[in-house]
Length: 473
Image (cartoon, rainbow, N blue to C red; front, side, top):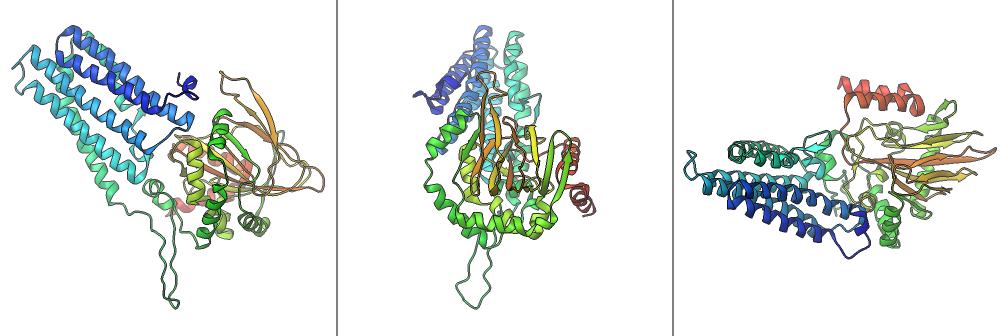
């Protein structure tokens, strides 16, 4: 529904304001009291909550994100929800004063204050560990707060008074759980910041970790980076200054979360990747799946040991900021146990290829794929099909040969793609990075993912050796 608004003057903040107005009308209707006004308030509540989803969606698909808009949305949510419970209490009190041991207005505002505390603490948690740290429990795509969509049933059967009592008990209890979560998160150490010692005889200690969100969610997955990472990060930052980000974002959105940039990485960074790829060549694990795949690969576990620069680049703050702006959402590194978090693909024998596929995510959130060209002395092409899962747009076919330093970035669940077969006396090496929006994965999904990686990419020894070592620890 928001897609037609992308290239108009309508901004996410306009939709937030509309949600705020409808929400205030909802609170007013409940505060008036009576059966008819309560039902009107319930309908307005459903409408207000529905509009609340549109501002974030418009921001995501149009790239019109801002810190102010995010805070405005949170503030409006909190304000409307607090007034909702306060209004329900005032309405019940107006129709039946003294019917409860405690004033209905007091119960309503008590629930509202608890909700305000929940909003505040969740905002603080999000500032520290990212949105994944405040993700609510969900069933069938519905989150905890979506229970308010049932409000018309409550008012239709004249259950407003019972709902108020339940809210006055449930909201403070839930607030206590959020307080405990807040205390737990705040006790976690923040990522170490790089420090330098001006004394030339002293040893320079420079460490770097991923974003605070990843550290809080999976502290064991973060490895310290060498000083070279900071030099590479600065070079990437300078290279991105030359990119017309607005044009790139527009192209990424119009192509349903896909972008190709022929020139992206600085030459010095590409040279280090080439050196890393050559250094781990003896460790390439080759696979052959008839009709689908032939080639070699090296997992992140081997790269951590023999080519740490790849891991440094994977966690580059400048690179991740660029990708997050493109995706329009917070990206996190894949967990440490994922051998596919970053990997090198080797096409070195005639016929090496990968057939048509999606980069299916087994994570609870989305998984974005970043491909970087390392070595390309071949006729291979990355062939792709856009909009195959977008019924509202015609399919678009394309092909690119991404040379050293080139970038391809896409949502793995949306892009149907393949690598065409390698010719005689040709060579091609590419690097893949995988970032996620939610690093959680079920036990069964993890097993399936590990089996796929063991059979099609890295071998059972490489994949399950890490699983066994983690189990022993």
